[in-house]
Image (cartoon, rainbow, N blue to C red; front, side, top):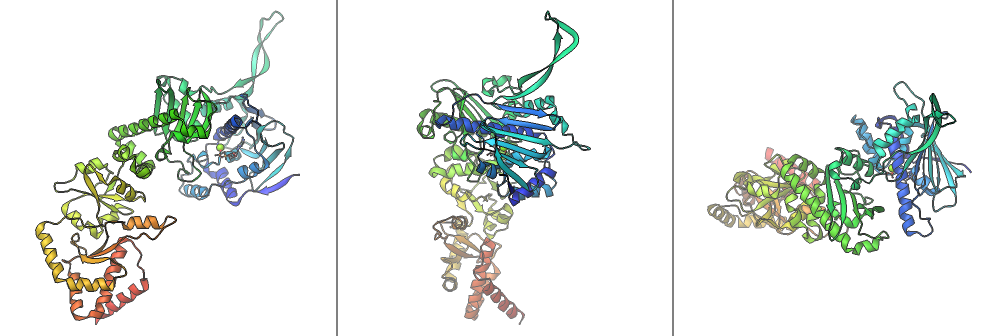
Length: 637
Ligand code: ADP
Ligand code: MG
């Protein structure tokens, strides 16, 4: 029975967008389909290692064939194949949420030529860029039945049973007609296909084979070649070299060979930013190539993302994402480890306890960090680019495990600061501290402009102290774990007492505090449910008020925690600081002496203002507005 089905709505629009505009480099459809075939063979191979019901074999192949008359090109594999359900869910949905919007914005920005297909796991659909119709016949290794999936790339596809008996998948593309500028017939040319395979898929580890017609000189009865006469013979040829790259000598590799390897193996479109090549012989022998991508993969922070390196034991591929090989904070690295010392029948459980693997992992971690350190020192711009993409992971690394890695990582962290255009390391910050600065100051805010104008900056500006700007959620947590750098403590500019006044200034504040004791107590009484303390500020010079938090939790951490599931009762202590040298303070004093009722309005407005400046919502906006109105009327009387 033939069933007709619709693509999921998002898929439809995505498909349309892709076919008609996103992609200009049409030839990559071949790479995408070959990658899928190779993935499917990987899946079969890895499953067969542990599933006795599956035949164990090394007889894998990806085939390419043409029919010039019918204008079709067919790609076959003897991989895992797909069940009915898999055909529906894998080829009927482009389910990665957010992909469509992302592509749409790119298109709107005219950045549509970006090479995006593989990055979004929509590689299969690239077939429609060159085809009017795509037919997929597949038999899963775990199913008796086989199915044919057909679509013309519009709204619908059909599925019916098929007579395929061999395990695996066969994808037939009915090529489009040539148009003015677009030549699709070239994909029916075996030389062109051979070149494309070499270009994009040379390192695919299974043979990619194609029948090729060859002209060989005709021979006479004695076996002598006859001049100008040829026989046409068909030979099955393997198009890719499949040489494991780690078997080559690093020095002999051509310039872009590693980069091409990386791109074809790890579905990236940019060259890797870093390549760390390790070749160790001794107690443990292994080779490894670790890459750091130039850009974070789109799904790096999604739950589905799996970290890990490919694992080859004795040169045989045994695992795709061996997560034991990379710490969480390096989850973005890609690459492989080849070791003759590891067992072929490796299971996930064994891996967790494998001592050799642990040593390899520790070694690789050190290597990667050393490479980053070197770059930070010698190629600052490159490092800053890296930091933009992946810095947050390293910050997480500082924080994770109660800071067990903090000493390894603290000198790799970059901070934006209020006074400097370029981000700095802690070491650089400390080196630039002017005489008299003891502590390292920081402020949490989405950007430095916000910190620059905040009232809490008054005294730091005066002193010429720079301030680290923390804008990632993880930042303050990281700072708390670090506690100090090179014996300099971290201090939030809006927390606790900064202790930056000289003795005379302190004395002056103290005596003012004595004079205004009753006033401060009265304001505190009015705001008693909101603030823990009302006091004269030692950090304000131009601004009338500010809100700071006590020594424990900061406002920023309170915000972050309140967004997390679970216990939300943790609150930062609020302290309202008033600038004793601001004319407003004198005005409040006057109100206190003359009009006790009005003081309540003043106190609340001061507090609400301070909240607003902090970027915290006012609890009762209507009440705030009412008080302002009363005050405005009064001022005009
Ligand atoms: P991705 O490869 O990034 O997952 P694709 O759009 O290229 O995205 O493929 C979608 C899914 O279809 C694959 O994840 C896989 O499950 C399935 N698939 C595609 N081609 C094959 C194939 N030749 N054999 C088995 N499954 C396949
Ligand atoms: Mg794919």
